[in-house]
Length: 191
Image: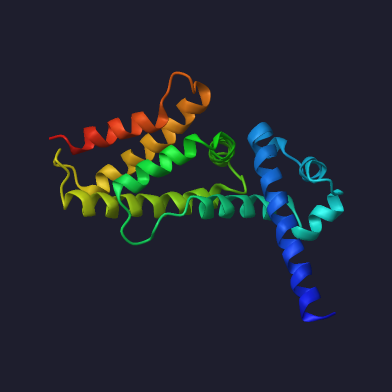
């Protein structure tokens, strides 16, 4: 096999893997993790279950890849995270209901004992709370206008973000997720 052939094969494999991840996002959004199956994902991309397992050996590996891909899609700069960038991410998410639905379904299911995404979400939330505290400190200093320390406000900010997603998914006509988040930011800045 030539170098060019190897590169073409790797590119095809990466394309197929991305296609499988998109299909997995759709299936999980529709059925939740427990209701999703490798067979349903394989069928969605025109593969056999064995063909899918060439890329992802089991359902847990596929789940981890879906979660990691979602984090890559939502990547914000590690340095200089700002409230306006966070508000832009909320607006971006309003254009991707399938991704938000998949994340929300997995998050909701992950609180059950033994769920394969439980450790992922526990670690992720610790990291996100830390990032939110840093963001709030950069914006307001050691105290928000309310007098609250950034570390105390960070879990509340995360709760607002996730809570808005659930409300928006349940009633998108009544809940303006980006607008409500901007309103929350206004509320944060008031003393």
